[in-house]
View 1 (cartoon, helix red, strand yellow):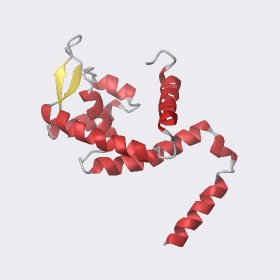
View 2: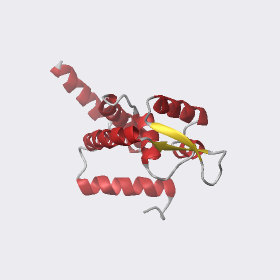
View 3: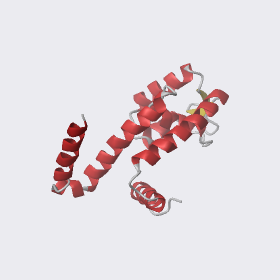
View 4: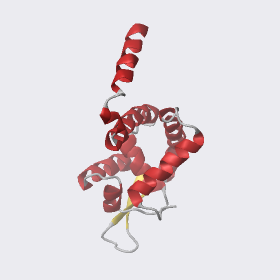
Length: 158
């Protein structure tokens, strides 16, 4: 088994010389795929996956996001958000309430149980992020985060 791992590493090492390994889109997709595996493993003990964890995190943010805002922010179809919220709601982790600005729009917030689960799951997610970015120094990871936020939402994001 060890030999197979060495062969795989050699093959990947060889392919790093391909021009695609310098394409930002490819690199972002590759990092996301690798991170997703680590994140989903870390979140499994909470019966969460990246998407449900992301919804829980937004519900816990105190920003009272609507389902539509969550769908747009997470780049998901509204029906996917509804299914994720339904699942979390059945587990007693989130609740939908009429929005203060528009009572027809439902905002999503965590329940007390959801807040407790989120706090624990967040620690696991942060450890997973650390594993996924293991090759980076702490300041490099912070720079990567700042650059990604800037690329996604512009220079004015703090």
